Image (cartoon, rainbow, N blue to C red; front, side, top):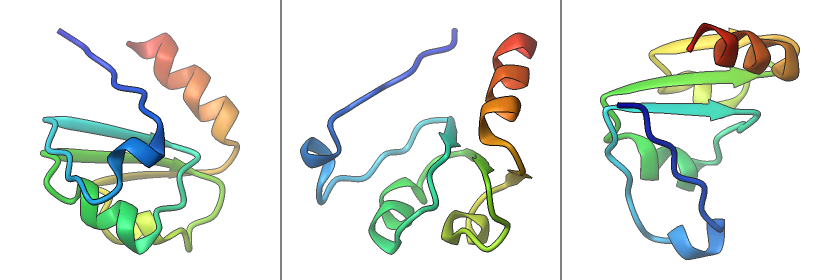
Length: 77
């Protein structure tokens, strides 16, 4: 089963996430964000720049047009 959580970032301050799969779309990954999601089983990041901070912790990194990559990913699911 595929599930998604969309939350108000203010509600997540100081918390950690540990899903089996975390897909970050258009998230550069601040230090705090990366610390919060580091417990995820697999991290997939779709970003516009390869120097995004989330690239340091992502298991899979797609760099380019975020909208195009997101549409392709959703079509594949």
